[in-house]
Structures are given as C-alpha cells and as structure tokens.
Image (tube, helix red, strand yellow):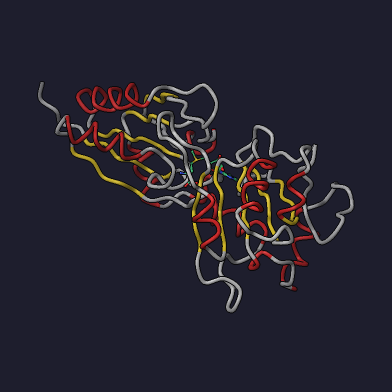
Length: 266
Ligand SMILES: C[S@@+](CC[C@H](N)C(=O)[O-])C[C@H]1O[C@@H](n2cnc3c(N)ncnc32)[C@H](O)[C@@H]1O
C-alpha cells in the first residue's frame, strides 16, 4: 500500500502546555492523528484541533499498551494520514522506548522526524530552583532509571549513580526506600541531599528536600503521580534565591521542617 504519511515523535514536555516547543505546538495543531502517552495532559491535547486523538497509554508500571501494538498503530496511521504525531511525555529520546517505535517505522519504510521536548529533570530543577550543576559541587549529571525490562537480567544501575555528581532518577515514586537502600549500600552517603518532585510544571506540583537516608522511611512515596528523585550536593539548600519559592509554592501547606518544600510523605 502506498504511504504518504510522515510520523513525528514529539516531546510533550513535563506537563504544562506552554512548555511545549513551538515546533511541537504547530505539529499538534496540524496533525491528522495524535497518538499519545498517558502522562500527556488535556491542555496539550486541546491543541490537537483537527486530529483524531488516540490514547495509547504508555504509563510506566501501570497497565499499558504493548510496544509492538503501538508500532503497528503508528505504521497503520501513516498509511491513512499525512501528518501523524506520536506525543511522548518529556523528551521522546529519554526513557520513552523511542527505539522500538523508530525500528517499527524504519522496518515499514515510513518517513519520520523527532521533535525534542523538555525532560522532567529540567522541569523538576526549575520547580525547586536548584541547578543540577553548581560550580565546585556538581559537574556531571546522570539520567537514570532503576527499572529494568523483563528478561534484561540483573542490573547494576546504581553504578552510574555512584559515578555522577548529580543524579536524576526517573520512575522513582513507588520504590523510594528500596532505591535509597541500594544507593547507600553502594557507597553514597546517607546525608547526601535529595529532592523529590512530583508533577513538575503543573499546578499540582509537590516537592520536598530531604537526605538520601530519609527516604528509607517506608511512608515516603510519590504515590501515583509522576515523580523524579534528584540526588547530589548541588541540591543542598544554600541558594538564597530559593527563598522566593517559599511564598510561591507552599501556600496552604504545613510549615516545612527545614527549608521550603511541599510535603510528599503520606
Ligand atoms: C517513562 S518516563 C518518561 C520520561 C520522559 N521521556 C521525560 O523526558 O521526562 C516517566 C517518568 O518521568 C518522570 N516524570 C515525567 N513527568 C514528570 C513530571 N511532570 N514531574 C516529575 N516527574 C516526571 C517520572 O519519574 C515518571 O515516572
């Protein structure tokens, strides 16, 4: 069958629609069909004014559409439509299983293009007003997930965390105590500053500054919200500019124990 369609793997950013790139917004507005992840919000989807909008629900850990099914849907969509947008949370090239989709498109001979987006770690750093690199405290950043795919075998994921100055752990929300234990066992001091940030860039954002050791408390959880764990000396509470966030971010929240934060403890 002849195929005139082109597929765009588009980064939807961390949630706020106005953090989309201009290119992403234009493509969404002109798309014939948009296939999106579960984390892509209604404000972003509202830009798809003329498209058929399909939830292909990739949400880590929760029931999600199989990757091969998504690949087939993309190929099928490219045969039926001229502009196919595959909207993926954050940046499509980071923990987004983009390779499987790219493989499916290449195998089917379909033209495609990647449109980057703001990844969650950058949105989280912006929320808490802490740079991921700070002169003398952090000159390297690692993007990490401790989750392993079925059949991948044992992972020594913590090695990368030990080697980096600042670590951004994705898909961290529901396994904080286990992660902290493994990192401390691997040699990261329990006193290392961390920040937990859920729903970065959205009005429902929650965040909290702690130490790695404090995450051993089993009550600590990001719950079902997308949560990122930042670890590193660069996260230490020493930036006077952060004082402003106390007023902006914690209105209505209980008084913080140390420094401005939005509590995540159940
Ligand atoms: C499957 S990964 C996709 C990451 C995405 N490609 C990116 O670049 O941000 C999903 C994870 O990203 C993180 N995440 C996504 N959006 C977030 C947000 N708004 N706030 C905090 N963490 C977020 C969470 O750790 C979540 O479990």
